[in-house]
Length: 77
Image (cartoon, rainbow, N blue to C red; front, top):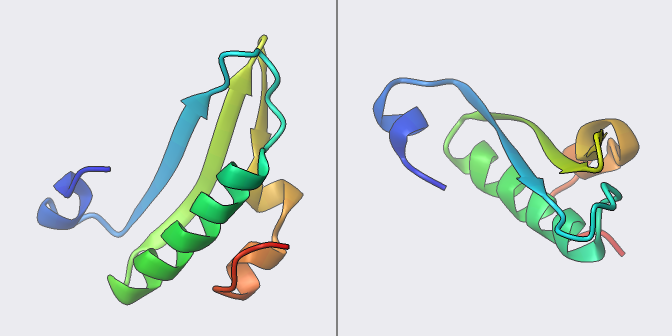
């Protein structure tokens, strides 16, 4: 992640990456990272919009699939 959003006066950001396997499903590691970034964004008073995973022409959004991550800063089970 870069500091460009913070230094440029940004108020929100998202993360996007692909899975080399082509499977867009969010892994447990993706969900842990999402929870950590949500907590860090809150400390910086930024809105973390979502974490997208892309694969084989499809995508998955952590915010739509696991909205509870935004309700708490605890790592997912």
